[in-house]
Length: 493
Image (tube, rainbow, N blue to C red; front, side, top):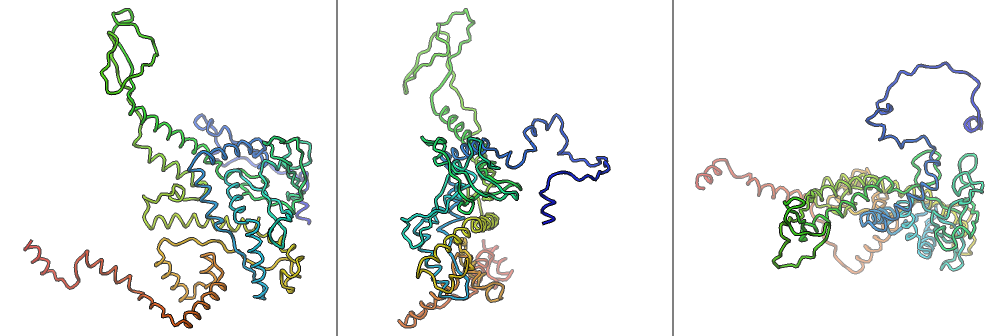
């Protein structure tokens, strides 16, 4: 407590310090005529002041607009949510009683399906991308088709606000304690963009009943901005360049021209109306006013660079989300196997970090609230786990398929044979519970033996290597072929 009191108390030490002359120099810290305008918008605001309500609202509006009108923006956000959440997380209880674990997992699975938990988690991940944050209230809904009546009610970030400015919230819509932790959230009864709007008033929701999902880019940050924020200008550029390229192609395809004359202003030429447009008939000879000529308008536009420009812009957009170009564009035409695998490693590492963050901020709190209510339902859970506050557990997510299953299976067998991995770890990569999978496999083998079905013999391990060697020999010639044989073949040719 002495250290915390020192950190959070106000005032300065009475001890004076001796002035030290400035001796260091950073080129980026110097201001000159060449970089003055480039850094003119840099500021020293705090995290919450830099993300003021007006700034966040403008970023939300623009990110939502791009998500609704730009196919790449929507596809990137949907792909990210599908890869992070997938079909939804699966709970594995880790208590000493396997029967109790199975009962907890089964009850949780039925409840998650009843409240459509995977769908809501995907929507929360999408909201973080185009809105900056997602809110959800832990509420009791008697209509939930499960013994546990807990429900997850999603709330738009616009409703967590203090539009009147008279509340005591430390940050827009959030009351904080002295350590910066939320105490309560001020939630508008209606969306500010609805008919009732702000006039409907607000309610205070305790922090224990509110889920707030966002990513902090700075310490002491309490609200979020869209993940697409750095790429919003790039989406606009991509759309404008596409429209300009299309307009240039249409101009080149259409019959458009300009009338001009070499005669002086008072020369002998028929008068025409300046800036007048003339509708031209197709497949017909035309006559022009005396003294006038026509020149067709040519589309001077670098349309050949459209694909390259589009690729570079999409690559820069996807970098803000740790997403490779072939995932963002859904196009791997320019990739080979090695480069595709290398890019995917960084992306799937970011996906695993996202899953861990979602589990700690959202899923663990939902499980704690669910377990508190599940203990009150007679007969739902075994008696020996009712005394626990929350059972030890872990979450399984959907695995990602390998591009080459044969190579992955061979590598997996090598790791297991060398004892550098475990069945639990290998099944976890596929989003599966190793105990459930082994029990299922044992039942299958028992039924196969009972029915007398013969299993196929596994292929030899060096089959692929022999095929590669045969292919190499076909390209380079047989090893039994001597140099004299090759010379005779060359002379005959």
